[in-house]
Amino acid sequence: MAWQRTDGDSDRPSGESSPGWFRYSADTLNRAGGALLGAADRVEDLAGRSPLGGSGGYGHVGLAGAAATYEARLRFLHRQVAHEVEHAGYELRGTAQAYEMTDMYASDRMAPVDIDYLMTGKKSQP
Image (cartoon, helix red, strand yellow):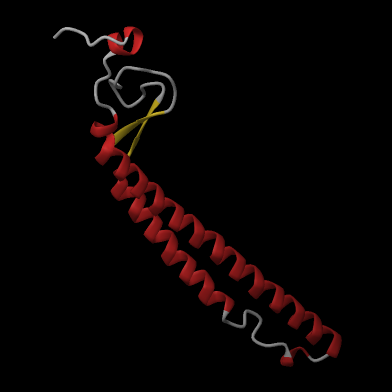
């Protein structure tokens, strides 16, 4: 688990409910992203099935046509949902990777700044 700051707080959080901070787990984000990718695959499989069992057995030509149109629309919507869920899965995995990279390079980017040098142009004395 690691912490990310969400506002201008300058202090490290002292507990779960510290304002301005949230906890994250890259492993949990990766697992959730993987679960969403698996769900997207299952939803995509639904789009390949005939949810109404084919329209040939409905008798009346108007009813068979309406069933075929509904089935085509349902398959389209299944594919759309699958793409949305897949996108969310990749986004979660990307977020986890971004957090890990940020944590990995934080010490380099957060090196101490010599305020005296910034204000006066002269190095401070140790």
